[in-house]
Picture 1 (cartoon, rainbow, N blue to C red):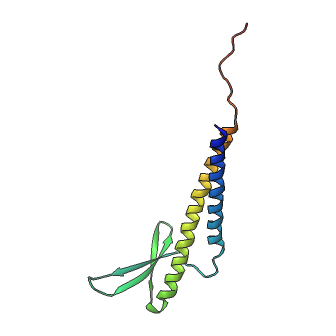
Picture 2 (tube, rainbow, N blue to C red):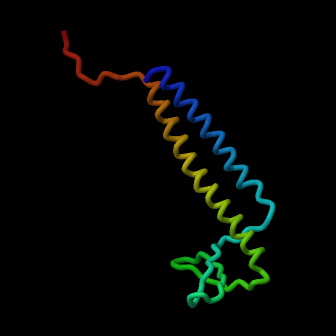
Picture 3 (cartoon, rainbow, N blue to C red):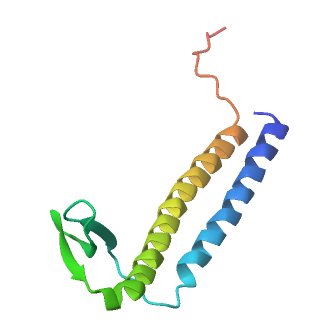
Length: 122
């Protein structure tokens, strides 16, 4: 691997580390409460009123809990914060995997080749 190629890989790692740092800040700066659930809006008949439910993950399925209109704004903020956090963490995992892949490629680029063909005695 040429020095120019290695420099390009190192620059890509630096860029990804910057992105990872940004994603870590998203996870750390959560000052308000979150709810680990999704907000579902359903209509039980065409043109009928919207009913909102929390979809809460549970082993092997999910549970639903009705959300009263008085709580809807707060629940919407808290589920939105959870979604942002979850998406940031998922991207953080992908960025880490890419950094690891590139670092391994850089390491292989620094290795010298070893000739494995047997030498004939003279």
